[in-house]
Length: 132
Ligand SMILES: *[C@@H]1O[C@H](CO)[C@@H](O)[C@H](O)[C@H]1NC(C)=O
Image (cartoon, rainbow, N blue to C red; front, top):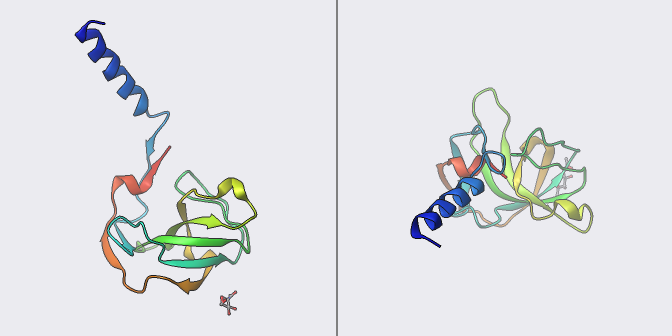
C-alpha cells in the first residue's frame, strides 16, 4: 500500500472511532466533584437504593429498590439541581447492568458503608460526562 493511502485509511479509521454516533459528550451535571483519588478509581462507599430510579439519558444508571451500589464520585451540587453521585450496581440480580458506571440522585440511596474517609475535591472534565 502506498504511504498516502495508508495515512488516509488511518484518518478515516479515527474518524469512525470518534464519530458522534458512537460517542457523545453530554452536558456537565456539575463543575466540581469529590473522589477518593485523582482518578476516581477507588470506591468511596457502598449504598443501597431506597427506591427505583430510571436513567433519563446515557449519563445515568437505573436503580432498583434494594440494590447495592458502589460509589466512585460525588458531584458538588449546583444551585437548583439535584445531588448526583456516580457508581455501579453490584449483586447477583440485574447482572446485565453490573460494571456500568453512571450517575444517580443521591437522595435515592442510603449510604451504608464508608470505605474512604479521606477524599479530594477537583474539577470535573468532559470525560466525566462522556457516553458511548
Ligand atoms: C440506612 O442504612 C442503615 C444501615 O444499614 C439502616 O440502619 C437505616 O435504617 C437505613 N435507612 C433507610 C432510610 O433505609
